[in-house]
Structure formats: C-alpha cells, structure tokens
Image 1 (cartoon, one colour):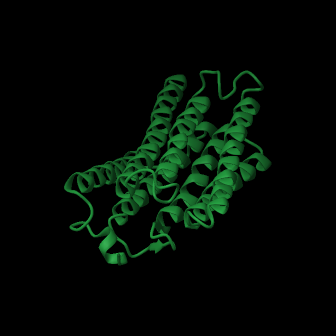
Image 2 (tube, rainbow, N blue to C red):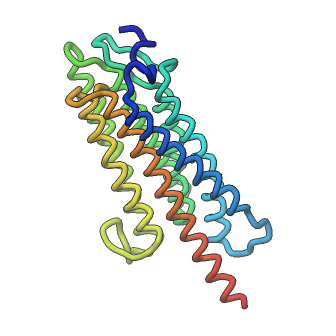
Image 3 (tube, helix red, strand yellow):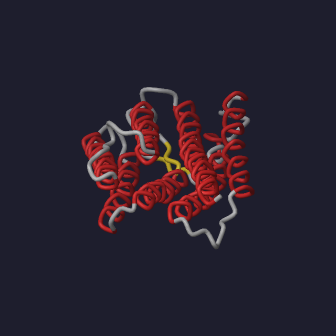
Amino acid sequence: MSMMEYNLIGDQYTGVQVICTAIACSFSFGFGVYLWWTSHPKPHTLDERERKLQFCNTLNVHILIWNSFVGLQMLSSFDNIATPTGSWVDLTNYGVYCLTCPLENYQVALLAGASSQRTVEIMIQTFGIMSTGLFASLTPLGSETGLKVAGFFFSAFFHACVVYSLNLIIQEASNGRESLSEGRSYLRRVCVIECVFWLVFPLLWVLGPEGFDWASGITVRILLMVVNNAAKIVFALYLFIVQEAWTVRTVCVCV
C-alpha cells in the first residue's frame, strides 16, 4: 500500500468520516474566530485576574484556529510515516500536541499563580506524554512489542505526573482548601475538564493502529481528531465564560 493510497479522501475515508472531520474543524475555527472578535485585550485593565484571563483567551484563539487546520490536514498523507508493520503515524498531529498541550497547562499554572517550578514541571511533564507517546507509536508491534509497551508506560507515567501536578497547583492556589477531587473554584473545574478529556486519548491510542491495533485505524483517527477539537473548544469556552463573568462582576463593583 503506497502512502497516497492510504489517506486520500476518495479512496479510504467515507463521506460520513469526512463530514465529521469538516464539522469538528469548522467548530474549532469558528469559535476561535469568535473568541478573537470578542476578546480584544484591554491594555488599561487593572484587575490582575482579568488580565490573565484575557491572555489565556488570546492564546486559545490561535490554538483553536491552528488546530482546525491540522484536523483537516489529517485527510492528507504528506506527513505520514510508515512503520515496518504497515501502520502509519501522523507526525503533524504529534507536533501540534507537543506545542498546544503544554500551552494549555501553562495557562492553568498562570491562572493559579503557580511558582516557576510548578509551571516548568507541568509543561515538561506534558511534553513528556507526547514525546514518549510518539516513540511508542513509531515502535512496531511484533519483535519490538516490549519497547512499544515501555513507551506507553512512560507516557502513562508522565500523564500521572501531570494529574498530580494539577492537584498540587489547585491545593497551593487555595491554601489547601481544594484539590482535584473537591472544590468549587473555576480553577478546579478547568483542571477536571482537562483530566476527563485527556483520559480519552490513551484509550483511543491503545485501540488504534498506532497502539495495539484492535480497532479500525481511520475510525480511531477520526475519533482522536474530534476529541482533540472538542477538548480544546470546551477548555477555551469555559475560560471565556469565566472571563465574561469576572468582567461583569468587576464592572458592577466599580459602579
């Protein structure tokens, strides 16, 4: 099977799969443009939390728009790498994961007022998830299954480290009153949203051809793309809602 035979829309992707891809990417692009149009930074804002939320929304604008393009790129095959067993790895996806996912956790650390140590730790741990996941994806099943399992183990280990770091960030920001398992702050909620979505990715990876090849490759890739776009949209949407609510509260207090 040649690389061009693998991912061309007319040959391998069904109409439903292409429509799902287009809808998910359209939502991501549309919401990114909406955020950009409605969330222009206010340079004279005095409230520190509002400035941080404005910065995060601006960052999410570019993440969403870029992510929508990468979702469409999945229908192409120019960046696919074949493994010796015939499976395929989409390098652009991992490149985007390695950039955007640490930026999401940087936002969490920023909003929490976390120390530089916590910020650097969680960003490196997040990058560790993606880089070791790429290693596991490129390692073929068969003679090197042990290395593949090792790569998945290290990726899962970094994933656990990220969850632990998020818990520490919440505890330190609330002086011990909240954690990942309890609390009512917007910071805890955004961390829970992230953890819930991020649990889906390793499950789909295990099922797909980059993992242990237990499910249809194209179906899993479409699901990964949809979940990836949904995770970033929900993350950005929640922070946007928090910013809007905080802005209204600040205006009411000033009046």
